[in-house]
Length: 225
Image 1: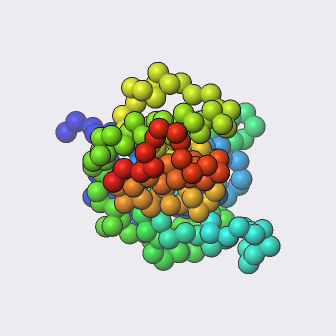
Image 2: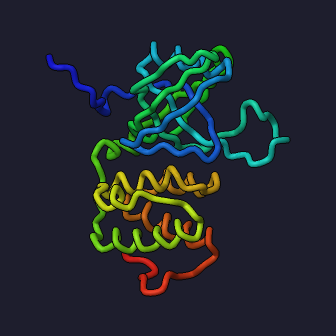
């Protein structure tokens, strides 16, 4: 049987090691580079490699550092699993890894920790469609999004490779902006939990406008439905 690098829904694990990180977003099929240096997360990587090579990226809900536990904060109910596609050990005892987004998950029951890292039983049923690459149902929405993006990046003094943007697929473009822009925790979570690519674009446009405190871009529609 030929080896298949693409994982399927039936291969998703019942239990995931969790990596809580604020303002860090992973989406299906997107790639996320990470640096692991805390002792518990070095152990987490070893565990993940021996148990399906998947890690659950999830955001803490707490904003204040003086809450119940800075070490084990409360978590949002939805995260995204990432498959370890590459890892290397550095000379200063870190791991550099790359995750590829697999599928979003619902946090069910948290289990006892192992070597300091958290684990949980998770549910996948609500996000089975994550294995089907999404498309923009409203084809005009991409041009509206790009016009807003140009204005936003210019105001934020962020350089962009517009040639690469123009040839990117709708999903790749939306994923890269969702993951790369400096949005707040709850804003990143809203992007994660968007029900469709069209909805994620609408959220991005709203967030870019709010970030810059402007209500509209001259000559650009507010929103296409």
